[in-house]
Image (tube, rainbow, N blue to C red; front, side, top):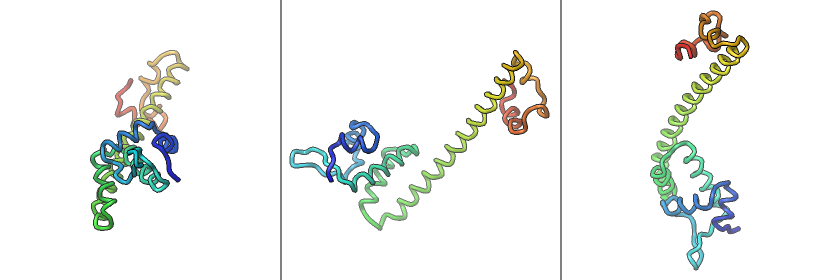
Length: 148
């Protein structure tokens, strides 16, 4: 089946302008054009586009995504550099996840902090608690934050 830019964008849940931009940046060398120069997407292109969107969500640069696509189109002789690019990006995502987990723990601590302050009518209560008085899961967070 063939799809227009708008139809494929809808399938992907992105704006048509995003697909046009990807094409302009050279990320879509696999996309064919009609006799009139209109982009024509096939079902197989959907899988490519899902990979591109996945890599983009990981924070990979468009330059590196383009490099990945070009290497993939070159075939099996580029397996090793593609694998290296994916492993490098996977490590970057793991670091992002660790940062987000720390951010979430801080937010959970602050939620507890302000719920406790609200119950007691003052931020003095949670601020002045000793480490032993804090819920165990927040002791390391309070040490990092040093109060409010």
